Image (cartoon, rainbow, N blue to C red; front, side):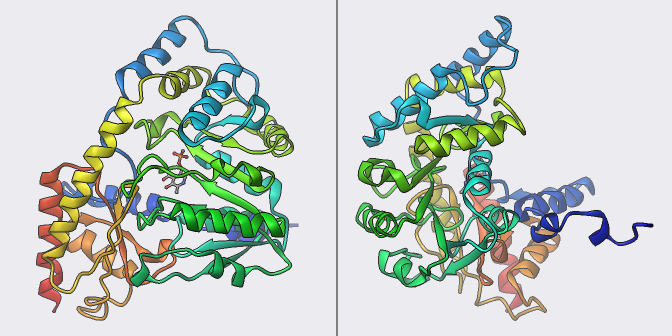
Amino acid sequence: MTVTSPSQIFAGRIGRIEVSATMAVAAEAAKVRAQGIHLVDFGAGEPHFPTPRHIKDAAIAAIDANFTRYTVVPGIPDVRKAIIDRHAADFGSDYGIDEAIFTTGGKQALFNTVQILIDHGDEVILPVPYWVSFKDIVQYAGGKVVLLETSEAENFRITANAIEHAITPRTKAIILNSPSNPAGAVISAEDLERIVHVAHERGIFVLLDECYVYLNYAGKPVSGGSFTWAKEHLVILGSLSKTYAMTGWRAGFALAPKAIIANLNKLQGQSTSNATSFVQKGAIAALAGSQECVAEFRAEFIGLRDHMLARLAVIPGVTCTRPEGAFYVYPNLSAYIGKGGIRSATEMATRLLRDAHVVVVPGEAFGTGEHVRLSYPVTRENIDEGTRRMKEFLTALA
Ligand SMILES: Cc1ncc(COP(=O)(O)O)c(C=O)c1O
């Protein structure tokens, strides 16, 4: 038989997902840059700081000591211990070594958790706006995403009440991300406790993506891991990427009951095996070493957020919720959509790139059609220049 169409070549599951929007934006931006055009880039979701010295030194020392072979799949005992000790010290969680796994980035922890828990037809509740990959990862596993609308006027707040309304007999899990990408929305400790309570009572898993847990500007960081009474239904998904400026290292983890970790171990053992050996040593230095860098990064991000909000505020018609964490702003550009031939946030992002030379990610990637996401770990000068270009472009549309 001759294979002719993509549907005959590729498995159905790869057709259920899309190219990551943030990566697509980066590719478009690279093309414009290749023409010699200077862009102000608010696209990339990563800290602009270098990885702290003591973390780099630990990985370099590990390479020099030839710590370059396979390790056990879930990570060496010391890295698993560093994960549980850090989490226990900061949030009062109570996990043992066999309830932790070290992964190649938080994304792998999330991807594999969804693969081992979600079956065809299982429903997964996902609050809007959501981080791009959640939806695709659930769909890849065959799950059905149930979107939970939130109100921008209430800072995209997620309540136990709303979650309760979205639950059906097919609900298997809820994915929460606080502080959130893209809006920097934070779930209060009270709301989180109520949500976890509801899920636990109903036997529903809560997948808590704590990628930005230390970048909480509203108060003391909150983790669902402190609700030890609900441990049976909690999976904590952690990442060192943003906390320690280690995005390229690929270092993340999951904390969950033993049976879940055993299955994550099984899947990882049949795919990527251990996360890079010397990255594990760097991760130990990050987690067990001084946490001063985390506080420094946090303070700098707060300053940048305030600077960005002040600059956006001078663009007529642009409104923006006040992010209480992470490092993104999610302005509403509905005042300009419908003008100058721009019909959607995607078209807005394309025009901002081509005409204003500013890189942003369109809201459609996060489930809303009137926003764009701006990542603010850049210099203050870049914030000034990028928002000046946006203002000039947008006001000329009116
Ligand atoms: C909400 C959220 N979860 C997970 C990740 C993945 O992080 P990692 O670099 O650890 O894979 C990101 C990265 O942008 C993110 O924004």
